Image (cartoon, rainbow, N blue to C red; front, side, top):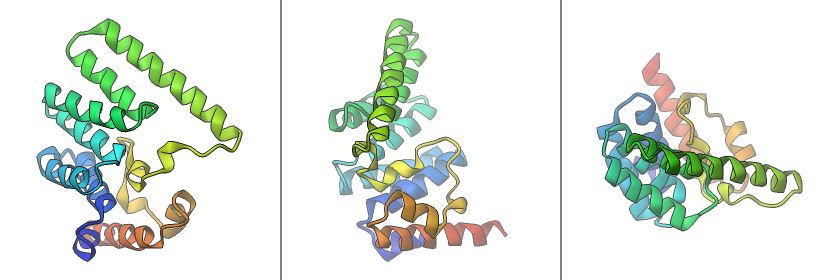
Length: 173
């Protein structure tokens, strides 16, 4: 919240806060944060992924698919978006589509690992929201060092996210 208060146009702060709420299964509270992030940064596929993932957790399959499709329209090689889209198909019992989509995600992941090994830039690093794309995301474990290794050119991001993480650590004490 503090990061958001410091700069209300900082979409990554909304995604990080929303991801923390997602981890606490506070889906309804997280959705407006993700919607704000998609409005503020319409080119951030990670924000659309999180919105779709959260809508899917609430059983809003059609809405989830629409948001995930936006993420894939931005970045068709976005592995996490393909994986969650496979979950959408599985919820609808569209097994063939789910399997094909999951296989595509696995193939893309292998390709991206190969490109990373060759030192090629990865589109997944384009937006800070992508540092929070696992169900195990824990904002209280964020440190300045870990963020600098993820996004070395963004000291503002580091300061804001660390402020958010510190505040959440304090609330847990």
